[in-house]
Image (cartoon, rainbow, N blue to C red; front, side):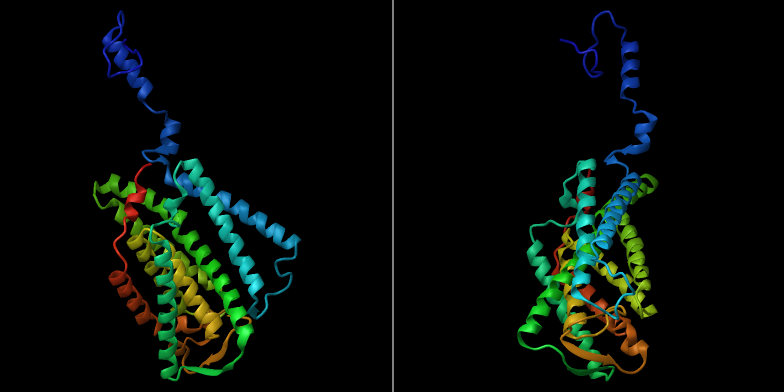
Length: 343
């Protein structure tokens, strides 16, 4: 039986082919409003980012309101050293809100939430590899500063069960730090910005490398913002800001290679844990309570890192170059670009 609504079937009786074809073209043509909001792969990236930011802002405002009412946030000036309870609250809840906002967007866009970086068949393997490399590379930086006379160990502060207890607590805190900062800057936002920029590159240049160009343009922009975001930390320095921006690109490379955030989360958590808890040095100018060793910088801040910590030393730059080489050699090529394909 002929279907008058299908342009590709034969025409029904007593209907002129030309008028039927014209009617079908009118029906098939999307409205202007739909073209503004909907693209080939669903809701356009710009609107997706705006909606995500709006949802996340509402959620974070709600958390802040509850935190103040429940006296979970400090009511006075912040202490000189960050307590673990505040660190866990300040990083854990924003991560959960970021994950929730991304989950809501995945339902709106009809995408699996796994495309935003918290999946992968090698998730545990990549995570533990990141942990190992984070501790060892930070230790190499500390050893370099110590041998050069730029870092002095004062004494040990924790012993026995107390040392183990705070080691575990701070590892949990810095795991939340890694999850929050990586998922915020290289999760949904990077995925969506890449999706939008890939479409622009494809439209402008008709290039088969649109996805790669979109990814690295987005990664560069977000890494710049990630670096500048550390400017508010007390004691931050130009080298420290540069290092934060560069490590954002290093973490983006791990995402591009593996297709997931787990290597970056592991490295990020282990680097901060070893720096703040184990060696007791400043992390972007921030110190934590109940750290294992007490140390202090000695000499020129450009060389020692000064109040910024080891990340403010010029020696951090060759360490980051070494980490990049390790990434290229040890991590397999992933298929992050395939995640950008329409679902």
